[in-house]
Length: 155
Image (cartoon, rainbow, N blue to C red):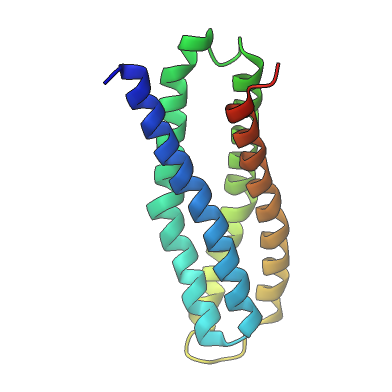
């Protein structure tokens, strides 16, 4: 099999793992929060951390590495409009994750350990959830826009 085709296949696998995880995780976290059941919310919050490490991080590594290796076939990352746009959307989404979402998740996980045994969920958790939902929506829409650029390659 051709080198580029192998890279593209691995790249697409990374995209599926990455997008699949961020979308599914958001859905079941929001659904768990809606129950307002401390045990369910705590468990879901713990799984957010686990799946981000197991899937989102793996997807990021696969996407970034293979994208960098394939870009020279089109002149490089910054020489082709659709690649450069996709790269910036990916980076911006990553910045939102690193600066907003991960710190919120860490703080929520600490709070969740305190109410896992059935204690009431503190108001601070719900305030953080609203911020996580908003920032997470933006951080999810950016790679979906990226998907558009990678598939349709607009000039």
